[in-house]
Length: 488
Image (cartoon, rainbow, N blue to C red; front, side, top):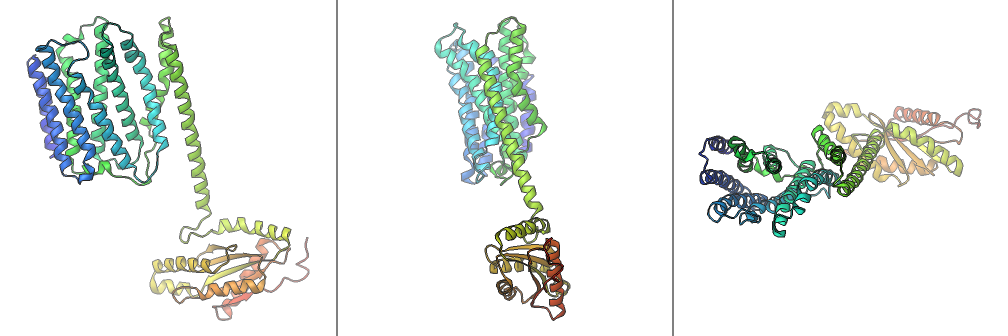
């Protein structure tokens, strides 16, 4: 249905270029395409669960109001001869902005449900809006306020259009920089919003050219092309609503966030350079008219860029910490790995030396693990390793450290424990080994002088003795020879 609607709408837009130069003909054709877009949105929304229809209803209401403004505008001009702002059509045209902004706000909230406030996306959206807002102020808003040729209400109406565009730009930037799925409906909707913004921008440029004496309003093909931009915008909303995957527009992507791609970076760079570019233009013309506005805009953009840099630095630091933590963590069991153990043991020994307290180290090896793997398969072996690690960890003291040393071998650090207490802890762990399995352990008490490698070597020797003596037991390492135990 989405493709059929898109083809029919494209043909209608193409035929529009060939219509006679009649206000009633062109207005009627524009309204037909616009109302068809609003109807397509309602039809597409009807297929969605009721709680997901609100954003689409808002879009349909905004487009329907805007399209109604076309008919009211022609009637006011041709019949009532009302051309000065505000006209009866302006309220209808302006309703597009609050309806679409509210619909986008609901979408953003649903797409990022459960993730909290996305400050990065907010800073990016604010940066883009601030840059283009300064541009709108200098060339549209400020000249309108200083015009003097229309009433105050007319000036307010004229200013309302660029403000509405800025709100739409902010919401669109926030949508693009936020999380959530990015299927075809997402791009149809953002394409429609972009078309509205492009159309309004072109109208502003046309108005400036007319004010400077260029008769561009008499170029029929140019006016039809500009009007077609809005017809495309009406159509794209309908295409997105009728798409089979329309429900994905409000779907959350969990913790996933949008990356800072080249286009986003280019847009942020362009927005940040608007203030100095405006100042350069006014300096080249010999007089700075909007100095205060440019100063305020520059300061705001500078603070936003600094904030964004701070966010990036914090993100890099967080990722570096995460990578460092992952490098010290065993993927299967979640225990500290051998790298973390090699860092921890020397510190523990030095702490024991200063405190004058005992410390023990034990090497644990699951008995007949290869046979278990061959019998039940490697996935079962992995489950045994995970469950055994969890069971042993639950029987250790809170100050003890259990790490995976490699394969089916684990290592335990027992600070402040003598040989008897360490043996008691290990025997509790042995009894808790799951799936009817057992382990052999070699226990070594630090003599206060040996290196960490020497301590591990004694525990390893005791482990092999435990295995040779029948497994499923804890074997204590012999003390080092007296000559070797002398502190250097």
